[in-house]
Image 1 (tube, rainbow, N blue to C red):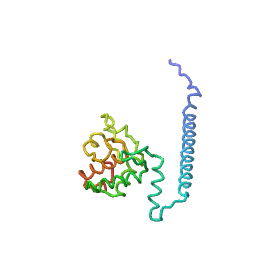
Image 2: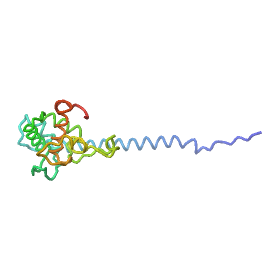
Image 3: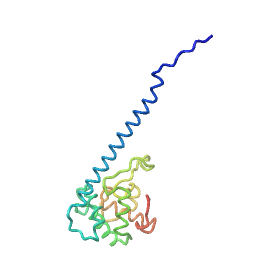
Image 4: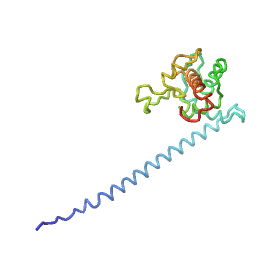
Length: 186
């Protein structure tokens, strides 16, 4: 006859305690995330309250430009240090001279989606990165695409903001008709 052993009480309690600790960890994490979001909201509110010389019509662009200022690059090949607004305007001037279609709004929309306005953004996780050619810069261009669609008069550097924008717009013009027609990752 087999002797049955009693199940230790400690084992019965382990799961409920683990669940309780997990719930507490989740609650702490949720509180940290919410406090971080609140802090970001307060910071955004403070930025929004800073007086500006921008007209009321320019206010939506001014809010995005303030975000991009934290991502300043030292200088572009044209010698102008800048902000996202300046880089887009420089690119548009080159695009106009070279007959490349595109608008300020189309460029800005795609830049904000692709890099959040960070000229040093680099994607190290997608299929291109796994092949050793990560997408880089404001419009997340891979080196082979940049080399093919590079526009003369800009730096031959995929991380130069003006060169990156202009090459990406040139690529989009050839593939989609214009950067304005790109509404998702390309």
